[in-house]
Image (tube, rainbow, N blue to C red; front, top):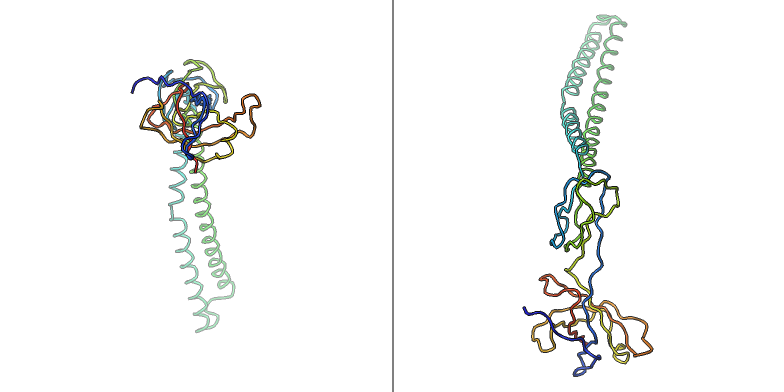
Length: 282
């Protein structure tokens, strides 16, 4: 596509009652974003340079992460140990088996005394009762231990997730699809949390600023569609949306400022371009 040579319009005009042309429509540079470090440490790698297009969540730079990586390894091992303990059922099974045996012995003792009184003396019966109660309590303890092991496993899983998040914070990521305009730090420098490292601007969505005569401003409102062209004679156009109509009027020229939002997914438009904008008035 040839370079845009369209000059800004001199005034807003009303076209056939439903289309309003905007004066001095100019694409503005979006606000830049300074992407900061999330942790303190030595800047180990820079993965971008000025002019690079980056996608959302792509890694721009990395802070040295040896300690964080070791924390993740330690958390993984702790989780494996906790998982083995949580999956071990032998203590509970043995406690239940012991309780069954103890209760069966007590039942046989009581049955024998029913058939032939004093087969087992009272102190012997009490001993069997104590053994049965102890075995039942061992089942309860083994059950609680199993529950605690499961909770310990869940806690270790949380600690692993926490360590992984901390490790990920050593990677400085782009918050949006954008263009790198400046690299503010060098490899080997010490950075603190919130220190800016890379400056980016998003060119996927651009803002158009323009003016409209006050008598026509009463007819436009937020959300209206607009057509954006490189030149007045162009048949093809890009859709835009009106997002702001200034509540104030310039008393010198009786004009009102407008802002429009333009999707620029194909990177056809650049900040600084003059374009023709026609508002579609319902």
